[in-house]
Image 1 (cartoon, rainbow, N blue to C red):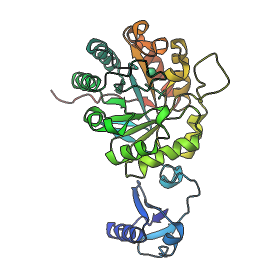
Image 2: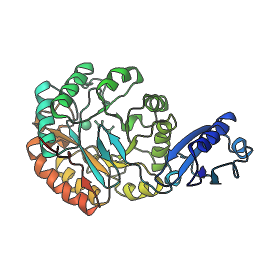
Image 3: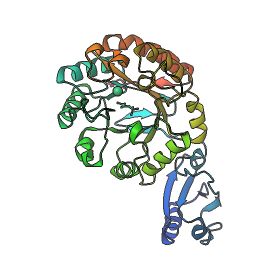
Image 4: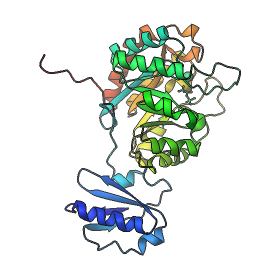
Amino acid sequence: MIVMKPAATQEEVDAVVDRVNSVGARAHVIYGEELTVIGAIGDAEHVARLNLEGAPGVDHMVPISKPYKLASSQITHGTRSVLDIAGRKVGGDQFAMIAGPCTIESREQTLSTAHIVADAGATMFRGGAYKPRTSPYAFQGLGQEGLRLLAEAKAQTGLPIVTEVMDARDLEPVLEVADVIQIGARNMQNYTLLSEIGRSGCPALIKRGLASTLEELLMAAEYVLKEGNESVMLCERGIRTFETSYRFTLDLMAIPVLKEMTHLPVIVDPSHAAGRRDLVAPMSLAAAAAGADGLIVEVHPNPDEAICDAAQQLVADEFPEYLDRVRAAAAVGGKALWEQPVASGR
Ligand code: PEP
Ligand code: MN
């Protein structure tokens, strides 16, 4: 990590970047509020031989000992990343509420849910068109038709869309509608997919694998960041433990620990962790109070009839009241739910 002097000029930054690139390393420039930092990813010895300490504009160099470099909190000097998703801020003191059905099933189900969550104040709309199902015989999602319905929900409500891609071959149509691409828990270590999403430049929400460590989650984020895509959010969605009373164990300790390890926003998914509707509200409140940057929850107009994850989806009509409670818990965690700025004038 090459820390530039506060008064370093753009020419000096560019000169360092050129020299880093000249030895086959990759330079990532991070413009902070006070300082510019250049991450040099590559052979440390080659970079050391450049003798950049003392070069014009360079203040000092710091080796990053962690295997995740661009994701580490060290590289931003502890400053937290705030993402801009179609005008919505995620991270910092902003709290994001991502809500919508597990699966896009029909036009009526999609649009009615989108309007309810939008009117209540959700930040983004979620819904799967390509679904990772344990059984190959289970419904696999509506695919392109699902994407079309998501586009309609976006056009009607203005909510940015979060949707999963499982296969890089589907990336092109998904990119036409997605504001955030979800990488599901089962794909967290699909490194070719992660790199492809990195190259696409589309913001990514990476879910923690069912049995992955936080370091492995950050290494997954590193694959996206390494391609120059800085818009990455991490998502804790429950991990496998010996406990069988609920689907997964929601690891809330991951929130403060990830915040120590990384500058990236941390989102929590209580729906998939719990597998049960009654646990979603208490775990949402706990996550928000613990300082999560947002939640992603499943909401359905009639959960009992849902094709997928029926037991865990919140009842859409109950969502406004749930969101009011989340707002209060987010305030405990030091954050405010993102609000649509009120248009001035007439
Ligand atoms: C989902 O969010 O729809 C999903 C399948 O989640 P996960 O990958 O966390 O199981
Ligand atoms: Mn689901």
